[in-house]
Image (cartoon, rainbow, N blue to C red; front, side, top):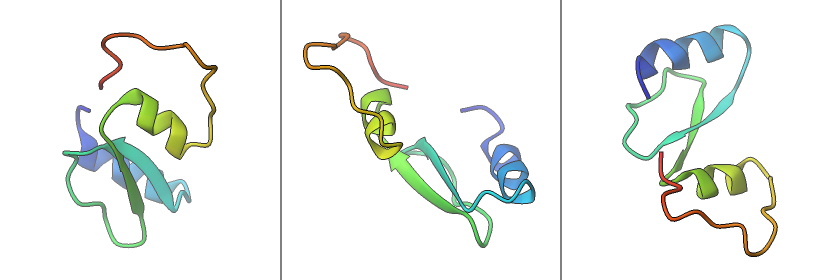
Length: 62
């Protein structure tokens, strides 16, 4: 994700307290929690989105 630090700062400024980001993203600013995901499927799971069974793509990574 490009400009991750800037995106984290903007999320915090807008009042978000948690974000979902790739596993290798930098540390967030104080007060912002990062839920790290290895691929898009995991990010959707962290967001509470359930995927229909059988819906899989060979390359569902970030």
